[in-house]
Image (tube, rainbow, N blue to C red; front, side, top):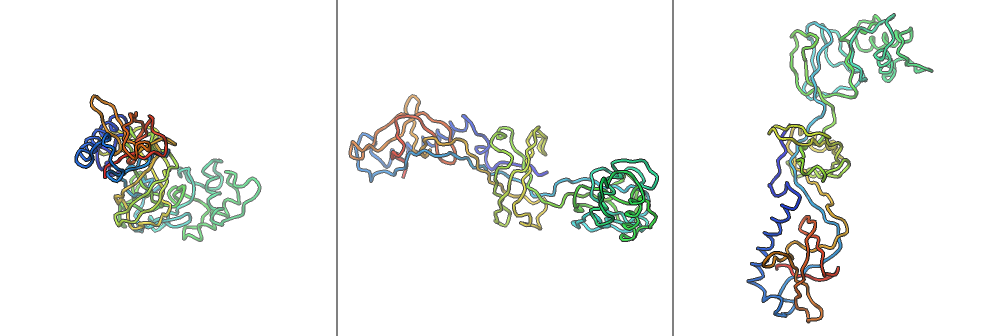
Length: 362
């Protein structure tokens, strides 16, 4: 799978180190701006000589931009259950549902049926009971063959099962003999899509030798999540997926792996799968790179100011310049301690009431 890379290293880390770098850069910029455009807080100049912003109680969010890929999930190889000559194969990207002929070997149809138990033996009258018999009965009933009754399907082959099989064989062009030989059907838990052909008509088929690779039919967005960001993303969280065309589609985190897996760069990551709210979006894109925007709340209901309002002081520490109503709109320098930060705002504690106006660079 395509490696997920971050746009810049600074967006990859959420923690004290990132905050310190962020604030340090901000402080230098702010001090340079103020040195050239204001006369300082002791000047008592009018409010029109600087720009202001409000110190307010708000939720702080952090927006990450990740790289992902649109792909079909569940890629796996499909091998025939019997030997012979391949006489018909589907096309790549063709999709199949239960009851449809997937391919032909020796001109005998191989039909897709719904089920999770792989076919492993011939299914015929007089055989022992089993989960595979019950699965066959249920799959044929779902296609309209036979009639469901009390305790049926039951995994026991009787005359009812034979009748269902014979009717099914007649409709699919198979030999009507009441026997489902190994290789006549393929069980899958849902519709499948042909992702790649590993053989061609006229080639020999043999059990264990892949004829094609198939996948699920629903496209998902795949992401690699850095371990340091694992606690920022949760199952069910909303995402925004941006296609190469610029179109944006909402998505939802469907699953996050619980253990680290190695990606193409031999780095341990968590695998994230997201479902598109509009599955038809970008329908022609397969293994296409996309940009994923993810916003998470890092702090709720905290007093915060724009990060550009923070000023570093000699010897360490931070202050904000608050507009003082008592001093005719002059500036009062107030020491503060910094907390969480996100998307341009920093949480603060100090003698700065909510609603106060603080100085920010123009």
